[in-house]
Image (cartoon, rainbow over all chains, first blue to last red; front, side, top):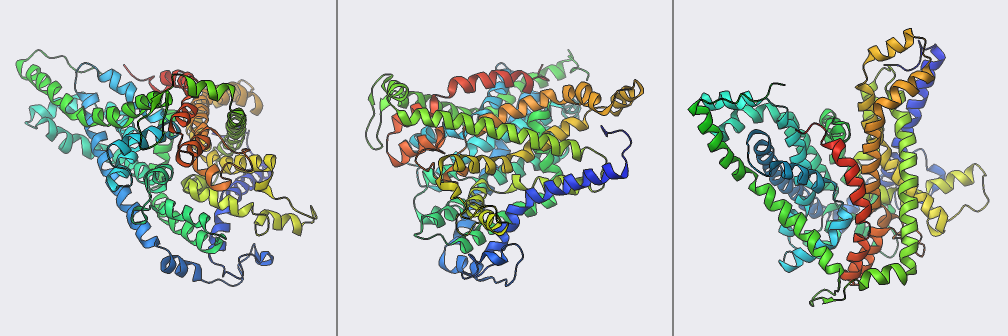
Length: 280
Length: 304
C-alpha cells in the first residue's frame, strides 16, 4: 500500500531510480569479485579496465582446482552441511511435534530454552565449545565439526518447526489417532506433509549457515583433509603475496551454490528470514 | 482457535496418557543437544574464566583475577570495548536507515517487486568470509576499485590506505557490515509493512491525513515492534561478529578494529590464554541478558 498519494509519473520514476540504486549498491561488490576472478594475473592490478571486462580468462579457476585442494574443501563442506542439516531437522521435527501436541511438565521451559539457545551468540560459545570438544578428543575431527554446527542448526530448526506445528489444530492429531495411526504415524502421515514448506525453510537455513560457517572451522580444524571451503579460502590470505585472482575465483565458487538455492527457493528464504522478527 | 476438546471418553484419555510419555521420548534429542552442546559449554566457560588456563594442562583457579586484570590493567580491553560499541551502534544505525528506506520504496506498488526484493537481498546470501575478502580487495590501497575511482575522478593525489589507518579502517569494516546486514532489516521491515491493513491508510486519507502524517501515525507505530526486535538481534550479532573483521583487518591496525570476539580469539587461539579470553567474552553477558529480557516477551507473545 502506497504511502504517497496517487503518484505522479515523476514520483513513479523516482521510486524506480531509488530501487535501481539499491540494486547497484547490493550487486556491485559481487560483480567486482566475479570480474576479478575472470582476469589474468597480469590484468588483476590493471585498473584501467576495472569496470568493464576486456580480456576474460578462466585461468584463475584452473589454478584453484590444480594448485589448491578446492575440490576436497567443497566435498567436506557439502557433506558437513548435509549431515548437520539432516540431524538438526530430525531433532527439530521430533521436538516441534512433541512440544506442541503432547502435554507434560517442563515443556514451557523447553520452549523458552529453544529461544535462548537461538539467541546465544557464537562469540560466547566458540571458546568453551573448543574446550569441551577437546576434552572429548573431538578437535580436528569431522564429528566435532558436526557437533559444533548443531549448536546453531538445532535451535533454528526447532524454533521454526515448533512455531509451525503450533499452528496445526490438535484435532488433526486426535482424528488421526482414532483412525488408528500410531503417534509416530500421525507425525509422518498427517503433520509432516502439511509442514513440508516449513521443513524446507529450516533445511535451507541450516544448510546455508553450515556452508558459510568459518569460526568453528578455524578453531577446530588443523589438518588439511578436513578443511571446509571457507577455511580453505581464508588460507589464501596467509600466502606471502595475496593471489587476488585465484582467491576471488574460489569466492565465486563458494557463492554459486548459495545463489542457485536462493534463486530457486526465494520464497522459503524470505519466510525464514522474517520468522524471528515478525512473529506476533 | 478452538482449544483441544477435553474429552473424558476412555479411548481419548488413554491416547493422551500414552502420548505424554511418548512426547517426552521425542524431545530427548533436543534436551541432549541443549544440555550437552549449549548449557554445559556455557557453564564450563564461566568456570574457565575463573582459572588461569592453558591448553593441555588443568587450569588453576584464580577467582575473579581475570576479570580484575581485564577491568583494571588491560588497556587494550578498554579500546576493544569502545570499538565494539562504535562498531555495533554505527552499523545498526546505518542498517536501519538503509533497510527502512529500501523497505518503504519496495512497498510501493512497483512492477517486478519480487525481482527487486531478491536482488537487494543479494548481500545477505554471500558467505560472511567472502564479504570480508571482497571488501578487503575493494579497499586495497594499490589495486582496489575505490582508490581507482578516487584517482580517476581526481579527488585526491594520493589515495588513502583504507585498512591501515585507525579511523578509516573502522569506517571500512562498518561499511562492509552495513552492506551485508541492511537486507535483513529491509526484509523484516517490509514484512511488517505488508501486514498493515490498506483500510487504515484509506481511512486516514479520507480523514485528510497527508503522506507524512500517515507515515508518522500508521506506518511507524505498526512496524515499531518489528524494528525493535531486529535492532536487538542485530546488536547481539554485531557484538559477536568475527569473520568480517578477522578477514578484513585481523583487528588491526594496532587494535583499532578489534572487538570482543576477535580479541578473545587472539588471546585464546593465538596466545593460549583460555581463561582470560573466556572472561573477555563473558564480560558482555549482563548486556546480553538485558537484551534477551527485552526480546523474550516479544518472541513469546503467542505462547499460552
